Image 1 (cartoon, helix red, strand yellow):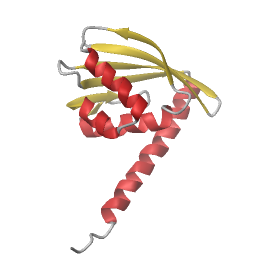
Image 2 (cartoon, helix red, strand yellow):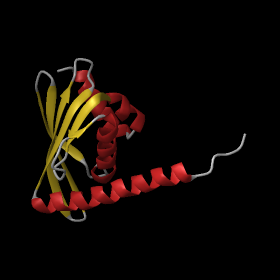
Image 3 (tube, rainbow, N blue to C red):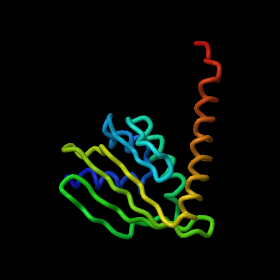
Image 4 (cartoon, rainbow, N blue to C red):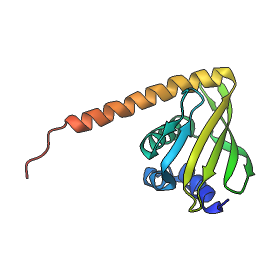
Length: 143
């Protein structure tokens, strides 16, 4: 595995730089959520889910507790406490030869944590969709 991709992932989680996340994703990236039954395909949707998850889950208490690497990927165990619920999970990340993310799978436990993340992610994705709609409906300035 190219450590460059994993290093860039850690840098994104520290910086919250959405442009860096976009650049890190392969155009055909696939995202698998613990609450969505089908894989989400493509950079746009993967970016939407990962940037929303970072906002919801990546707050002050978020920490990676363990790391296991392979030739082309890594499994990162994470923890956080949100609304009094201890969340434990893993990010399973696959990289291409250039260090871009091609596949990102999230698994979470316990069930209370899955239910909490389902609600919070739904709220965040709805909020972002509302912002995008509001931006599109703004009148264009006349030059």
